[in-house]
Length: 466
Image (cartoon, rainbow, N blue to C red; front, side):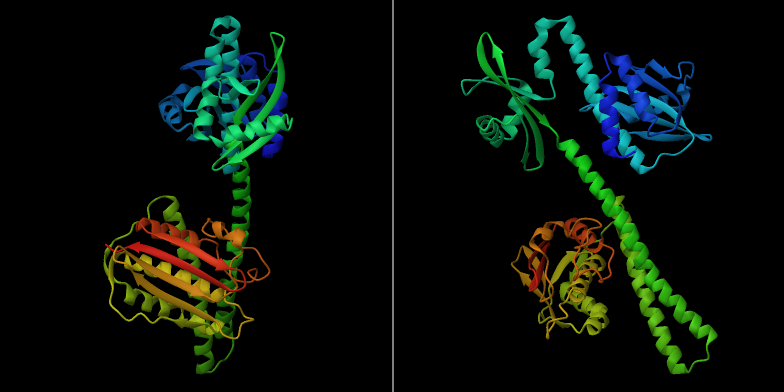
């Protein structure tokens, strides 16, 4: 079920909820749309609160030792038990665990299902917390102000243009995002009732309602942080990017494999001269290098994701590293008719992982070559070194096709590839620059890009001169 459908189903079921038990009945119904579970139990404060079906009590020995771990992680977890999987889905608000849903299923859930369950955990936590708060208000109205201050939403009351009341959450929001108050006042003047405000690293949803208190008009504003919901949208975009990546990497792997297979079959089955065999063998070798490069990117990416990639720093002559990188890409530069210029002839040693810095420079040079502008008579990739004592800058500049201004901030994202008619036929996994950035940052360095579409691109790697 898609996220939007899940949300719609959630809202439909939640509209029927009147207390905590009916909430879990609704959650059980929603979860059945996502996971084909055999039994579902709800654990509240280490005790069984609800079971579906009512007579199906899950053996707590299967999961009891993992409850503290789930409380710490606040993320859905599935454990293999014999031929089953036992799922632990925390219902939480902020960092507070409210309850744990335990279920059994015969199928291991996919990453998408885990994402759905995480979203369901978050939404149910909000709902459950609000139910408990409402129950508290019904039983103790004198604590209404305390309840307002426990709200996860900011609440502000305006009277004659001034703030008459604001709860703790709204004070916190205004303190952290002072520009938001001006935005709210602007929207009130424009008589908008519902709107969203985007601020750096945060999104807020607002509602404005005129109310009558003691015969006088007030304006009630509620402020909700919807950054998490926006992040769910981003996750969907990431899923799309990953899907495209899988299709792309399949193509990238198939191309050299097909060439290797075809040339090998020809050598085996067709009588050939020694020169022809040599020519075919060189092609097979070059295609195997491409294949090795793709696999190395995948391996490096896997190590970066699992935080197992290590660097070993040692005094290294950066001049020699650049020369070795140029030798590595010379054959590719000849294919694309790109001239590589490097005029720095001094010995300059820095403390770095020679292999990884060579990988960085080789990747940047390879991009300069692959993204050269075929319409230009002279195609050049220049590499320069600047040393200011504290830092060494390695600058790779070309006169290639450039990068659109709105894409520069994205080129270091994992799986990202600039999508245009000029880049469509250029091979690549979309991982190279993400790996480069990680390696540079592991050296306590930085990397930046400047470009003008259709004219040039300049990449600057800055490394500490230790």
